[in-house]
Figure 1: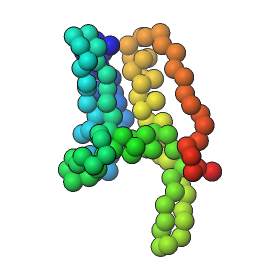
Figure 2: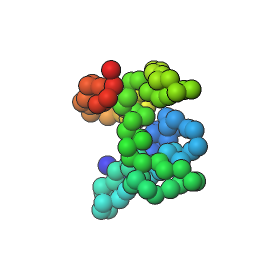
Figure 3: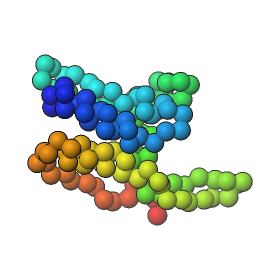
Length: 116
């Protein structure tokens, strides 16, 4: 992908990124492999911190892929629908539409391990 196309995708993904502390959004970057090859990296390596919060690749994947979020509140297990489900996928689809590209996307529709 060209640098211009990568920048457009970067802006589209950052606009769609869920924000709590802002760490995940700040971790979205362009990586250059050679003069004509760029990719978008979402999240960083586990253990590296941005603004005091760890924004790992695992966290980015979970916010995108899990339909339901499980947590404990007052010691009781709770499950809610993930309001950010497929945020990366939707941003990429919009980028494809914006740029009138003819690209077929394949998704893994299976739930992540641990989900019901």
